[in-house]
Image 1 (cartoon, rainbow, N blue to C red):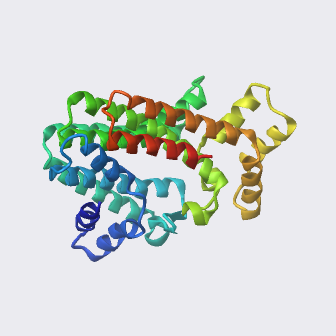
Image 2 (image 1 turned 90 degrees about the horizontal axis):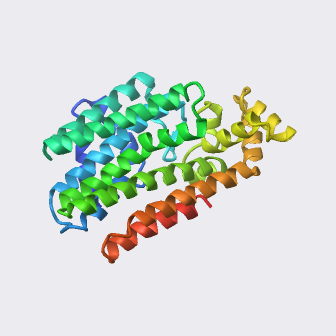
Length: 314
């Protein structure tokens, strides 16, 4: 990870001073580096020492960083990783363009890994875009909103985690069947990860999460607790308090006091418990994907991560 961190700093360096400042902003803010970590970890299923592993780890982190620059513009998020979001400092246009520059850097790096890696990266990028598109447009016609949202999470979040795991096992030299196993794990653990984020967006403080609680609510970005509440109301299974809460969520949330009120009401609602339970279910399913792997520290670490995700939502 130290090698990845050093290489990442070099990968975002740009000769243009403005672009360089903007590109380094989120790297300097830190982050979990979950995707490169997953690449390096699954690389240990092979020999774990191939130089391509660091390049693959840089590719997935650059792709993730670039998507954050775009996402924060679309969501009007004021904070990212505890720091002001890029668009709130430099404006939407600069954030979008530098996000594009980071995607270009990811493309340049993946080209060194060969045509199959380029194809996988492009397929993953397509899923990221489709996930964002479908989140923006919402479910079509009579499509179930909860199922639609789970597919959004699969495309927008889980696809890159699956690719991170696949890249690691692949470039680490693991057998093909193990490459497929960890990719399946990445898909499920990615959905669990995002559902846990939906919980934390309501249940944690801004100091804990690095984001303003309820930002998604204010920007009318769908989250699982709200979708579950909306489904109750649509089915006629809701109480008067549920209907009133949904009306407040659909109303004007520009006031900090109003936003804090609806966040507090959702924190106390059992739709948050349902979301926690759903996150835990996907985490358990992710861990179950690993059963065919040989016992050892890699499998144990992957299982522990899935378990930690379930507890993260608790």
